[in-house]
Length: 154
Image (tube, rainbow, N blue to C red):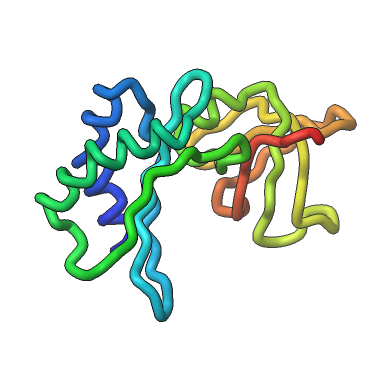
């Protein structure tokens, strides 16, 4: 059900967000035990997003969501930046990350490890192709990957 709500919100506010000069990165709807549910719209643009940007988008899209009323009960709504370590979910995320290091968390161990850092060299709907630091090519089915995000060097 939450995926359906997320898709519905994307359709409702995507055009407005783009019209304002932002990219709709993701929508997350989560049930929170003992509290109101949470609806988060993630936006981005060249040069990053400020708190003022989040406020402007929130004020513009909240009336659209309220009018459509896709969530029948109380929830908390916010607009946020996805951050520099946002997970790769959509094809455009993978496209931007090609030929860069990514961190993967796996559901099951591979060669004794559940976490891998490698260069993303390719992807499609069913798999990602990686090159390890040792130059080894590795292809992993997407169903084996719990999380994939850009690698951040500190």
